[in-house]
Image (tube, rainbow over all chains, first blue to last red; front, side, top):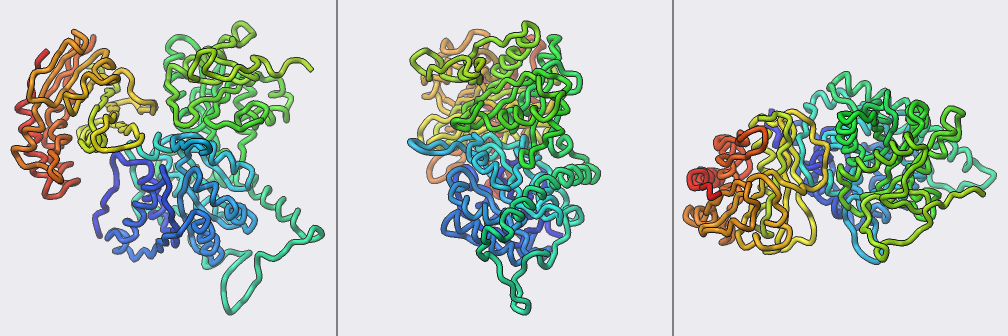
Length: 433
Length: 199
């Protein structure tokens, strides 16, 4: 038995991701570096030759590719052959992969690909935390999980294969975490002992049910699908698989908790003092984790605040979110991404507003969209207290204040203020028509 | 001493002096010395040797650290190079707590608030004397952590040290740097002996 180089202690988020992929005993890793993901694949290139894994006869293949498009194409090829595959990327790298990501979904290939999210680039470079990259793929059919701690990165990638390779699902899963804010910071991380990880992770199959590469049994894939053929039905089945993944994610989380004693809500959402809250702040990533500190401080001052972290964004956990909105009715939704031209400018807030229309009990809930932390700007805990105070004002006075900065119906947190510094939008975009 | 306190530490260094590594090592040392949650935050920008950089560490004995934002009002400020003191965002950002400066000179304490505890330690001299260098540059980050084991922090609940041990530094240094760990540890011990309180 070889002593592992790392088992428990403060560790960078990126290295937690690399160890999780190795502990899930992946067959093929394809790699191309991009900030802030780079150290994931750097570490993997060394871990595949690490004594610990060699002694266990683990045969993970590490392939350096010439671009992200080839990384994704390599994953598609290896996955067609039934291999367990993993890679990681970020920002522009994810954009460059996009064509092949749609192929993974259409071909129903269970790829796990982690993202150290960063600002998108155009006119200037930004490499810091912002979910604009992964949000751009929110409707591509991939499953998306937005993570809040270092330990959660490790755990989610380990769980990821059980969800992605589940026969009811067979879709790619992208666990995403804030670049630098989690990728390069260090916090205590504990690995699952290798033998226990092997017992937990879904058993490997020689081939998938619907596609294989075998010279004895040749099959054709990637053919032209005419309009009168099954294109629409294939698309609907991928949507159905997304919906089926909801219970698979819950079951996987429950099983993980039973074995290892750690959990992140029910796998879909993680509530924090949300049951008896007067106002609720919904968010994702580290900002949502940090909101829990704001909740504690406000509760000490007598304000019944609550927080809800959306951990699984696709499939969208409609019922699990609405359950809490139904109780509180006054809700803020914090996005760390911008969806240009979208009704609220925030991807999550628009989804939540749309979902609320589905039931009588949530149709009249007051949803305030917030956006902040774009391009890695710090969202401080004082900013978050201020956001909660806006929600409490709405509750107590029936009206939300226009400060700190409200434009087009959305609150923009932490802007560089001054009349000449920011765009001057209408405070209320949605007047009566 | 308040066990729920989360210590917030800012390190000011120059690119190449090892401040980012120090922030990470401090996490490992504190975790081994009984802190249940630790967080190191490197402030990443366009890195280059000699440019001022910042790294942050947060240490907690009981509570989970959920705040990932940069430290704004540090409990302990570690300055790797006295020439950084007059730069914007260094001495002028110190509002309370304790300051540790690497220097073999006297420093102008009036740059810092009166109620701050201020310590100095000549770790560059210590490293050069022990020949603890890399490509000719003295290694000062581990020695500074050695000095950190000796300093005190004061607030309204009383005076306390961080509860970090030189023996733990030895253990971590050996694990991280192999045989070079011995020399790092030796320098840390020297620094812990030579650190002095000047205010």
